[in-house]
Image (tube, rainbow, N blue to C red; front, side):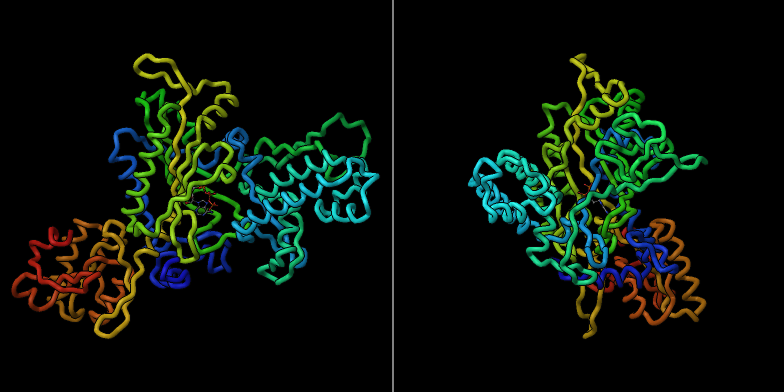
Length: 544
Ligand code: ATP
């Protein structure tokens, strides 16, 4: 856990013009955030730092910027249309919906699942082979285990073999928070609805997190594909029998839920136009959209956010080496954000938690104010995405090595970063309180390269034209050099220092009467609050 509270961060962000609730004036739109003047500067600094570290400073990296709207086939081939879902449970009383995996204590859930299924299997194994020989008590117990829909009364021909099979598949479902186990678990552990306090829960449903929209001027048409030919005049029941499916209309498109697919779809273009040697990587920054069931914890879980992703293409024999290099590079990144090493944790994802395409994943977690949670991810995605594209389009994704060796479909290491979570982690780490002259002071100890304002310039008094003119001169000189320079002549110097401290400005320069005599200024350091006199001529070099 961090020392600073989420409320303190949110309130500073609003008070000082970093981040506001999206559409706030109209009552807000959940999961969206607007960046104010200082927030934009901070966000740009974070994104530029990333671009410099991972693209500009390296020989093996290339940048791309793909469109947000992509052909819907991209998301069918990638599996997002079918599997980019969250397990959701509904409170039967107030109808609020929650993500099951956020509602439960995950370790406890895992232990209970194991224990419950082991017990249930043992019970099923103890049953006589034939249903007719079950006692009333056993029938009732089966009802309890399988939920009402699965009692032998509704499926009278069930054999113990079938019950066993059903249990195993239910256990697999339970691991993904699906099936009827999560409901039974929530009821048994008397988990209360966060909104109304009820403990009545419905079955889990999946919910696709992609936002849909339409391209073109035509009204939406949805194709329903029945499993058989429909007879003329036949009445079709709403919902349809099993086996029916709905095909999105041709003009449905999705707002991208990740930037990665824009990279994969351009792999061939880049190879054909730049002929890079392997290994090489493609990097992209940009907006991603996810219809999160419950956006929360400030910008941590938003519906519209910014990602910075890299797909690093390697020969399948070399993935472990590349994975290790990127693991170390990720630590360099967290250092550059100013995150204390002891607050960054690597969580090796067990096979059951990994995305279906991943052979190895490390979640990098950080001690956020709301608790330890995912900051960014590093995954070995094998050749899953390029093979999907190859299979779906019939176009070869093979890479021909320059040494004339056999062509192959590259494998991929994917470091995937979220801008909002990087900003939250940087703000959390920078937020500091101390005491200066007996007064409490709050300041952001941001690394200089992230600070939205590099230096602030103050004339000691704003009603002395000679001081203001000199200060303007210094301001113009610094502005030309650093760009992000702020002018402040409002209130007493102490108050101006406090304002700059709160937004993380590393240096404040004050022009006073002595400046007019000897061309020196006072430079005050944010972290130590020490003041030194520096010649104007030495100022630029002195501020680095
Ligand atoms: P989570 O488990 O927290 O939902 P995820 O594992 O689905 O995250 P990825 O799909 O791996 O996340 O996305 C890569 C990165 O994008 C994350 O590590 C995070 O930094 C960022 N990210 C993902 N979802 C969101 C979101 N809703 N809001 C802000 N950032 C996000």
